[in-house]
Length: 234
Image (cartoon, rainbow, N blue to C red; front, side, top):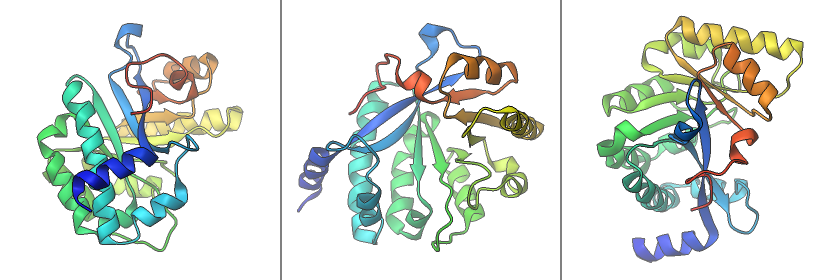
């Protein structure tokens, strides 16, 4: 099966969803300037966990998946030159040459792309510092996803802060303990001149609180439910 046929086959099964990331201080008509790119399956409208395990099980499968992902992503990038796209790369993918080739193929559009290094607790170790330096050498912005989860701990961020452009933190609850903790995370990020994205923002009350404490970006259901030119399946 050639690349075109593979892309057509995968497009029948999967799509890319674009979830808004909203910056503090932007006007309503300026909200949709950044999106996280999320893989979804047509039949479930959810992330296909087991399918993704197959995609990343070997070099050949990973290459086919990234060829399709690049094909779909570049359609949006070329049609939306003012928009920034955050894409996730799983730790196991850094064990394959195709991943590095994928990143290099996107370098002409590096100004529009943020590469998120996803957290993990798996057996698939990789040299994260080497990967960060590789990405920076190709002019990409780098984000640590799910900070404080898995290997993406605060210590890892502090040790590599000069090369990390932003961190992402998931707000799992909104009690007083969580409020104090998220203020601490925001403070640490800004101490190192790093932007922070708070995920899982559900309502306006949470938005007002987090922006009030100088969170740089917010992401979550509150914005996913709004109308947006990209916040739909591709």
